Length: 533
Ligand SMILES: NC(=O)C1=CN([C@@H]2O[C@H](COP(=O)(O)OP(=O)(O)OC[C@H]3O[C@@H](n4cnc5c(N)ncnc54)[C@H](O)[C@@H]3O)[C@@H](O)[C@H]2O)[C@@H](O)CC1
Ligand SMILES: [K+]
Image 1: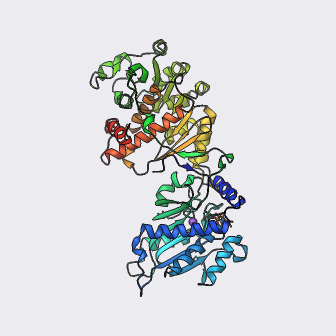
Image 2 (image 1 turned 60 degrees about the horizontal axis):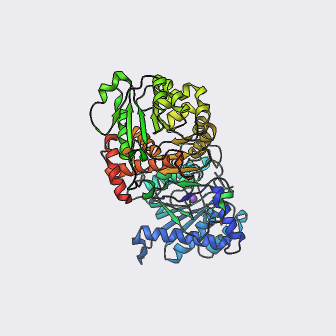
Image 3 (image 1 turned 90 degrees about the horizontal axis):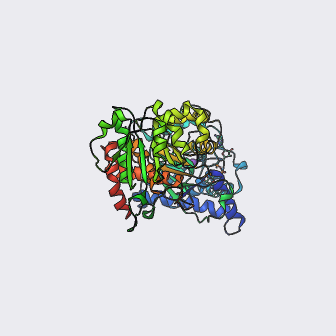
């Protein structure tokens, strides 16, 4: 897990590299050597069988080198592998005379060892490699790779042995240097206007820190195992190049309770429920809010649906709310510290109650039907504030912020491409609330410019009915425990939304395959135990 790590944009990475080189403590050439060596180390660490060199049948590598410093890394890798006895083929796309200086130097060093073949779009014969190292383009990918689609198709065929078992054109393992060469490192989007094969790498070795594109969009699935290699860069003042993004992390102290506290010290959460026959979603939220430690949780259906909620959990309180006036009256009780509106609520009911929720200024989570209601009532948007958390999935996001969603859906014309992170950040800045844009790559963006990413590609079972209701409940529970007036400066709705996202995925991870949403809240105690809360 990447918990807490900074996840860099390519601009931030370049700024860190330049600062290191400008400091005089390291040269670009040294960094390139370390980068190449790190890739070779990662290959040998992941596949220890390569450490033993068969005398008669050396391991075979094909290294694809591009026209920039990513290609430079490739020439280093080729030289180091050849030094270990590998039969190494280098294919080069570009003009040697236009290589950046460090890459050129490594090109020349390779030329003393072996041949450089042009990257030939028609030739498949050279794909007879135990390992294919892709060092065509790295963070400098700036335009679509349409011209290379056929070539990537051939690689795909060789990896998947489409040509048949005994063919010479087979590739056992696919390794990307920094990033798969068709993937935009800022967005996790494939930069191609042509249909690209779904080329999954076995491993991607990046340097210093993960980049945004490794953890969102298509990145995680295309990159395969991500190795973040230390090349001796130091993190100085990269924050001058825009806001930092981090991987969500949680600590036991975020959830601890203290011996002398009583139930009201842990807040009172209201979960608004919908009409008869729609109560399950809100009950999931309520159970999650209880499990995550809210002192009291009250479920608020309309009076006609109260009967539906008579079953367990007995810890849950119920109180009818039929209209905005009743809700506003309830909210005069200052001990009510957070609300959740949306799960199973019904769009009309959500629209009717939203003004009272927003006017209260309380911590609140707007989910599901509340988001649809909000999209239909733009006059409510100015009522959003920094203690609101909006939890849209992609469809709800498109209803709320159609222009941003459209931009996200456009085929990227150049790198850095517009990303889900950019969209969530812009949405949050626009509406003044925390935006938690759901997916296997959940992005949490705060109106103060902060953003965190939580990658949950390893728990696909989370994509199940009711899972979002549980997440909304977890956030509400944490918000209830930390009302704005108690919260210390770093404890913001943003932080609790991020924490809840991590708990949610940890609960799913703990349960494993077969998970349904009902299982999630009851995994929270185990997650807390694992965290030593
Ligand atoms: N600068 C440094 O100190 C270090 C850089 N490193 C490596 O350098 C890489 C970045 O190097 P660069 O900035 O030179 O960028 P890249 O090597 O990623 O690519 C830039 C080159 O590719 C061309 N290009 C981009 N998209 C193209 C497309 N679709 N079709 C054809 N050509 C295209 C550009 O015109 C440019 O010539 C990193 O990814 C990393 O692998 C590492 O060696 C670590 C140290
Ligand atoms: K690459």
